[in-house]
Length: 340
Image (cartoon, rainbow, N blue to C red; front, side):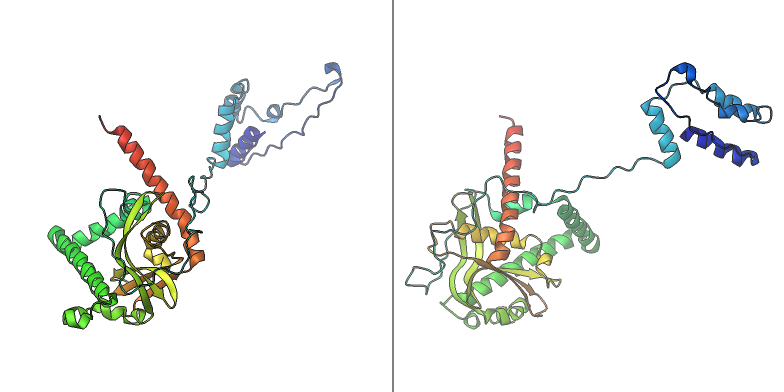
């Protein structure tokens, strides 16, 4: 029927000729002798006037149609078939295979230690288990890698290879000095002003002044932490009370404003990994249920604090477990592919 309608359209376009389709022929259960002879609509066409067109049409009547020809005909009349792409698999829809709780039910939130005057500072043992930073770097999404490479290329075009290397080195040095200054401010041994006036004038330190007023009861500074079951480690910046709630605090620097936690990329996964590790590390006799990401700015503008309560930490914990599983799978594949 579709082919016949196509022919009719072609005839109308050619010289205004109109052909009406024949009425549909019904089928019954009576014998073949009782059936009326089917009228061929093509016989009504003036074959002398449209001999070439009619001959080409009639010459192809005997060919049997197959699925391929039907699909080609539909594609010609209505265009190609649009196939829906499968929905992307979201981390929230996936469930970690090896589920472990974020919080330790056998450990209380308050410290059992009677002396909290000296914060813990456990050295990090390198190359024993993978670090949180390495796991996040090795499991970045293709979109994250794309934007990181694009930023790097743009900076190299602007600064040159040597200029970009110097920029990277200076950024690392400034971040290191910022963390050293915070460690000295938060430790009970001394005052920053007694150590270095220049660090006190740092834009990053000015940026976090209002945040520091709400930080008290420091439990750990630049201290290593390791999850004894999941086998990963990290070096956390600080564990202290922020507005009366015990938190893992992570100090970040940025040249661009990051007013929302979504702007901090993988930082929530990092601090949640530290929360889970500290709650399952025998070196710590207390439990942490909250986290705080503080983004400081070089120009001294007020830092943005991103507080993560127990509920928000629990939402990020499965995402961290999925990244950890992805890292383990990649390591297994690489080890299999390595020649003996």
